[in-house]
Image: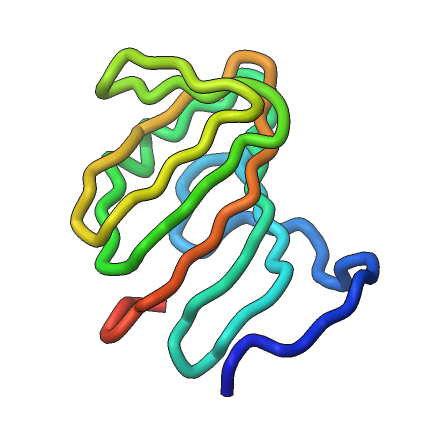
Length: 119
Protein backbone atom coordinates (compact mmCIF):
# COMPACT_ATOMS: atom_id res chain seq x y z
CA UNK A 1 0.00 0.00 0.00
CA UNK A 2 1.56 3.33 -1.01
CA UNK A 3 1.45 6.45 1.11
CA UNK A 4 -2.13 7.70 1.40
CA UNK A 5 -3.56 10.49 -0.70
CA UNK A 6 -3.91 13.48 1.62
CA UNK A 7 -5.18 16.96 0.80
CA UNK A 8 -4.13 19.84 3.06
CA UNK A 9 -5.07 19.22 6.67
CA UNK A 10 -3.60 19.48 10.13
CA UNK A 11 -1.51 16.35 10.85
CA UNK A 12 -3.25 13.94 13.22
CA UNK A 13 -0.07 12.34 14.52
CA UNK A 14 1.30 13.64 17.79
CA UNK A 15 4.94 14.40 18.58
CA UNK A 16 6.88 11.41 19.97
CA UNK A 17 10.45 10.25 20.52
CA UNK A 18 11.73 8.44 17.40
CA UNK A 19 12.02 4.69 17.77
CA UNK A 20 15.54 3.74 18.84
CA UNK A 21 16.53 7.25 19.97
CA UNK A 22 18.46 7.35 23.24
CA UNK A 23 18.12 11.12 23.62
CA UNK A 24 15.51 13.33 25.29
CA UNK A 25 14.71 16.45 23.28
CA UNK A 26 14.39 14.79 19.86
CA UNK A 27 10.82 14.36 18.62
CA UNK A 28 9.17 13.32 15.38
CA UNK A 29 5.74 13.76 13.86
CA UNK A 30 4.94 11.33 11.04
CA UNK A 31 3.02 13.06 8.24
CA UNK A 32 2.60 10.09 5.89
CA UNK A 33 3.81 6.50 5.88
CA UNK A 34 3.85 3.50 3.56
CA UNK A 35 3.70 0.44 5.84
CA UNK A 36 4.80 -1.90 3.02
CA UNK A 37 8.10 -0.15 2.27
CA UNK A 38 8.62 1.88 5.44
CA UNK A 39 8.95 5.07 3.39
CA UNK A 40 7.68 8.13 5.20
CA UNK A 41 7.57 11.90 5.48
CA UNK A 42 8.08 13.38 8.92
CA UNK A 43 8.84 16.51 10.87
CA UNK A 44 11.84 16.14 13.16
CA UNK A 45 12.74 18.62 15.89
CA UNK A 46 15.51 19.04 18.43
CA UNK A 47 14.93 21.13 21.54
CA UNK A 48 17.54 23.85 22.20
CA UNK A 49 20.81 22.34 23.46
CA UNK A 50 20.00 18.78 22.35
CA UNK A 51 23.00 16.58 21.50
CA UNK A 52 22.39 13.28 19.69
CA UNK A 53 25.86 11.82 20.47
CA UNK A 54 24.37 8.86 22.43
CA UNK A 55 22.66 7.80 19.17
CA UNK A 56 26.04 7.72 17.38
CA UNK A 57 26.79 8.16 13.70
CA UNK A 58 23.77 7.35 11.53
CA UNK A 59 23.95 5.10 8.44
CA UNK A 60 20.81 3.98 6.60
CA UNK A 61 20.05 1.57 3.77
CA UNK A 62 17.52 4.02 2.26
CA UNK A 63 17.45 7.49 0.71
CA UNK A 64 16.91 10.43 3.07
CA UNK A 65 16.21 14.03 2.12
CA UNK A 66 16.13 16.73 4.81
CA UNK A 67 15.18 20.42 4.67
CA UNK A 68 15.83 22.67 7.68
CA UNK A 69 12.73 24.80 8.25
CA UNK A 70 14.10 26.77 11.21
CA UNK A 71 16.96 26.71 13.68
CA UNK A 72 20.47 25.26 13.53
CA UNK A 73 22.04 21.82 13.42
CA UNK A 74 25.75 21.07 13.83
CA UNK A 75 27.23 17.81 12.57
CA UNK A 76 29.71 17.08 15.37
CA UNK A 77 31.75 14.67 13.25
CA UNK A 78 32.21 17.21 10.43
CA UNK A 79 32.30 20.31 12.63
CA UNK A 80 29.81 22.04 10.32
CA UNK A 81 26.66 23.96 11.25
CA UNK A 82 23.61 24.01 9.00
CA UNK A 83 20.75 26.50 9.23
CA UNK A 84 17.23 27.29 8.00
CA UNK A 85 16.84 26.96 4.24
CA UNK A 86 19.57 24.33 3.87
CA UNK A 87 18.92 20.92 2.28
CA UNK A 88 20.61 17.50 2.37
CA UNK A 89 20.15 14.46 0.12
CA UNK A 90 21.73 11.32 1.57
CA UNK A 91 22.05 8.11 -0.43
CA UNK A 92 22.03 4.72 1.28
CA UNK A 93 25.24 4.16 3.26
CA UNK A 94 26.14 7.84 3.79
CA UNK A 95 27.41 8.55 7.32
CA UNK A 96 25.95 11.59 9.13
CA UNK A 97 25.83 12.93 12.66
CA UNK A 98 25.88 12.89 15.56
CA UNK A 99 24.23 16.30 15.87
CA UNK A 100 23.85 19.20 18.29
CA UNK A 101 21.41 22.09 18.06
CA UNK A 102 22.11 25.26 20.02
CA UNK A 103 18.80 27.08 19.39
CA UNK A 104 16.67 24.08 18.43
CA UNK A 105 15.81 22.94 14.94
CA UNK A 106 12.75 21.91 12.91
CA UNK A 107 13.25 19.81 9.78
CA UNK A 108 11.08 18.07 7.23
CA UNK A 109 12.44 14.68 6.18
CA UNK A 110 11.60 12.23 3.39
CA UNK A 111 12.75 8.59 3.46
CA UNK A 112 12.17 6.19 0.57
CA UNK A 113 13.42 3.21 -1.49
CA UNK A 114 13.76 1.10 1.62
CA UNK A 115 14.03 -2.54 0.52
CA UNK A 116 14.95 -4.61 3.53
CA UNK A 117 15.32 -1.59 5.80
CA UNK A 118 14.75 -2.08 9.51
CA UNK A 119 11.55 -0.28 10.45
